[in-house]
Figure 1 (tube, rainbow, N blue to C red):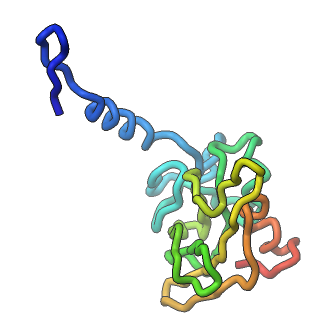
Figure 2 (figure 1 turned 180 degrees about the vertical axis):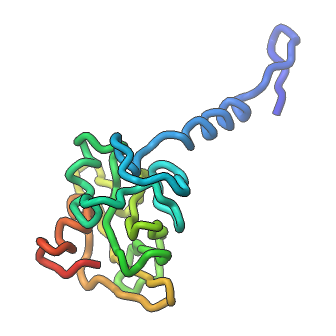
Length: 174
């Protein structure tokens, strides 16, 4: 979109500037960590897990609490939610605002290493001015379409799934 300035010259409006910012933003974020936890392959978009992407960890960190590094630690990017579902590789992790699971707010793809993560805010996991979030009801959708619904609610303080769902956690791995 072009607009005419007061001096009579044509200038590019904010639309072009915003487009450039969006393109530049696609290269930032997190995922593989500063030490390149992935091993070549399809890097995908940094900061967002995607089917087939090898941008995340395939080593011994896979299955560990992602938030140990991807909050204020040495990992690249601050994750909103993250975890590992090795049997869910190629599936999805869905975040709903209601127990009936009709109000889908986010759907993350499980990558080639069984990891899922995002640096993008999810409204129901974003704290309000008082420091509380609505919370999310989580479902894991397996590649064959079968679903596993988590019975409880996850808040922004417990969105690091591997903290509980691991071999050393209180719940079975995903």
